[in-house]
Image 1 (cartoon, rainbow, N blue to C red):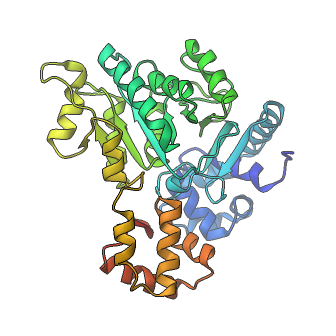
Image 2 (cartoon, one colour):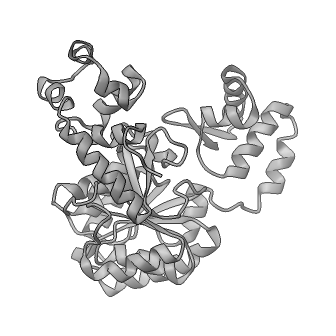
Length: 369
């Protein structure tokens, strides 16, 4: 039950403070220990925080934000929504490594946002039959990998990705550019209901009543890219949201794939340029995910295991964890799972990295080599 005066109440109010972006909000919470402590801190103490401005200081003392946050708690209670604070275990762990990741994500539906494999599928709203048919065929091939498919609920490729996931019983999440009191575009209301009924979810960083304003869509796109292991662009023109999502994914050091199109096809100009400029790997089917992402064990596993017999018990245990999870793992998570100190875990990781069995990613994340 959501109650006023709880930490969540203050967390929501913090997101309503004008001029306070995710980076500064996280810095304030790190400095004072909690959202409630931020609101109760003195102006003098708040002013010591790096990059805080006078307008933000003044707005933090505006009681209307707490009143509006209380209304949001009532809305969440009434409609059975969840809220994931960026430090919660339920918050998408991949997104947590993005400095500009939202402070809070609201969720409608019961889908786990931290599945072992998460793939974003995006593209133009003006999808051709080529793009739609490719998406349908690809999602059918993808079902044996059991990933989570993330997209933006827009017309075109987004809708084809969600529909393909539903048709093949793959969980899917729609990331919205507005509050969860509505569905935009309106024609996708039934699609949204099907997604939730099938065990998927709709998520958003925006409170109820927020409109799908133009500036909200790039914000939505960073969530799509940030919560996914990889982003696949199926069709894209020279400009558009899909290319923004691909650019964001690259900035987060995530894998990006693009489906090639004919050289004179305007709907594929963006994809062809991504491939040409080495901003995306060429994508022709599921085997490209198997090869680049390592999302399916190959036939060489038995041969490789014979070569790894020289591992110590600690190294083998750590490698087994990475192989079992089959995704990038945070150092803290590894230590907790294995009951190891940071120094012990790092020592084993370094040895495995030298042997080419482990790869270090940004943000103290490790995956199989």
